Image (cartoon, rainbow, N blue to C red):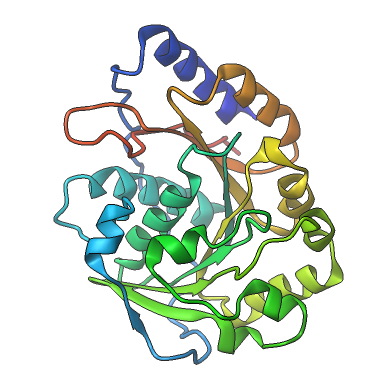
Length: 283
């Protein structure tokens, strides 16, 4: 996990200097051509037009390329897509050490940023099964059915995925409609494996972003990560400790962690958007 170790050096420096210090994003390098682009997703329900005011109030801004705060997510998008394209990755899990680090806001904004690129398609999946509906609430989406409806065989995937639009960002969303205390069992269930395989088949042209639970809250992330391709770890200045990042490092030894993002670094025009991501592992 050399990438997390490198990020820890930055995190320690930031922790020592205080949250007022800004750590710049690493400039992206030349990207390789994306893989498997241009094939439409299965038919879904009519497109839902999202309320821009509600998105703004929930810190969802990356659908608007004219908003200067979008720059951080666009740079993160470029770095992540380069790493995924080079490794032929399609499934990205986004997690954090503990709750409140901004992983869901990061997941949605990253999805919106990717979706602004005309050659890219995105499916955003809520798999934080113990505390779901964050994605649906943030987007203002009503979801009578969701992940559990698919897992329990009540609905099929195509009729459950919601097509949503904000500005020039068109994304597909698979929400979770209820919570469960048996999330670990669901993560390793045959039904979950079947659903993920179906997503891989039917959304093979998409980048699939999965909003996961926090790593240190349960064993859900450790259980599910083998079925994903790679991960993004979101830490929060003023909330996440270096010790928590180190503990995540131990739990995620076998995972392909593309980036560690330090979120909520204070700067003049943006107090809750990510402005650092660690470089990927080489090789």
